[in-house]
Length: 136
Image (cartoon, rainbow, N blue to C red; front, side, top):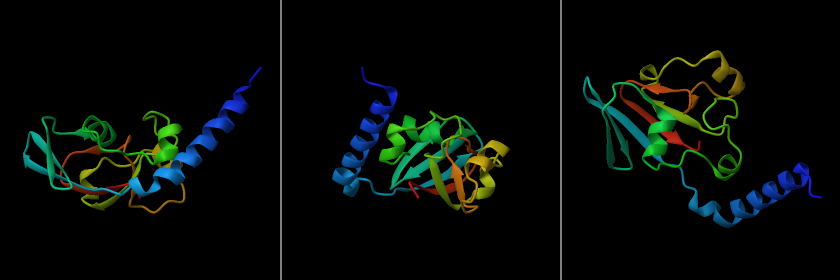
């Protein structure tokens, strides 16, 4: 009978094979968030505008709704689903960090040792213009 450990090793091996095969396809993307008015947040992704009707949005949810890949290959296979405990949805804040919600204690613990411009997209709420880079 196959054990859980066997399946874990199998998934990790598969992930490594896929990472080597498709690593050239995983390119970082630079995103820019800006406000058109008090009721909208506009997300600009490589020249494409995504309008949000909410005045505050969860960064990870909005990126995933618009099919922007937040996770690297390992993160696709093993992530916490937005609980803020794995660190695989980390993004680099290029500008506008003051328009993100302050990091929680949980987020700070998960990002222990990372530079201060790295945030977890699942924990960050956007309320104004922000420029980020996914898969830092």
